[in-house]
Length: 264
Ligand code: KIV
Image 1 (cartoon, helix red, strand yellow):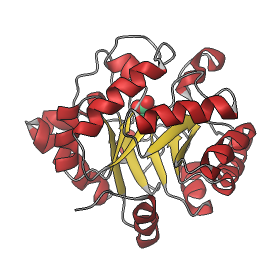
Image 2 (spheres, rainbow, N blue to C red; image 1 turned 180 degrees about the vertical axis):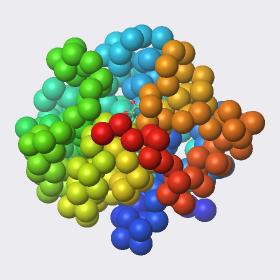
Image 3 (cartoon, rainbow, N blue to C red; image 1 turned 60 degrees about the horizontal axis):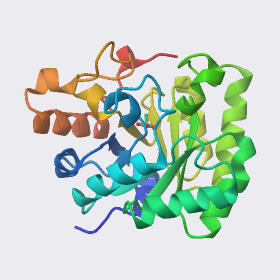
Image 4 (cartoon, rainbow, N blue to C red; image 1 turned 135 degrees about the vertical axis):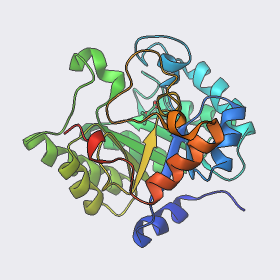
């Protein structure tokens, strides 16, 4: 099988086939995740919390992201590999391009993900015009946690309309993919229907074009309380490989997320 491409993801959206994504931080898990049939592997800066033990993603550096992306890339051949641009690594167009270049050239990523608002279309356009595939992360932006005052649902009421405008602006700027985090189910549905690029949801209901989860949450090994929108697949499946396969099947067959995972 050849590598999953952005055009294949678009075709999946058009055909109504759900896209399955998971985070990974090392080569062994990446291999298992790909073997289970996950199309998109994200080296998320969530590694700062689940791997490094920080209480937010803010301490994660570009060097950290390059290191983990290199490791994950050695465990994948077919999945599309996305690397997160960490906090303060895309403050200007030039800095964003330099950071993306490291993640792609040294890390082996095929796409980079940026936490964005509607005011950041210039950065997305600059990257896209220079051949960098971009995933625009909308909704809850964990890198802004100290401004937000916590990990709260975004996009309620009027803010939902703004989110849809932001998604359209990101598509027009050249983004290839959207991640929508912790937004009301109805907003996520409208957002997914409004753009022609695929929308991968987390804590955003079943109507997105695909789903992503933090690997350690879905294996039940994140210390403390698991987010309500996630599920411990290892508990019912009994082994890591089986848990990954059940997750893939559950997303493909629209059984995950279920009504019990709805948060807004
Ligand atoms: O860092 C991460 O793992 C993410 C996902 C939660 C989408 O951004």
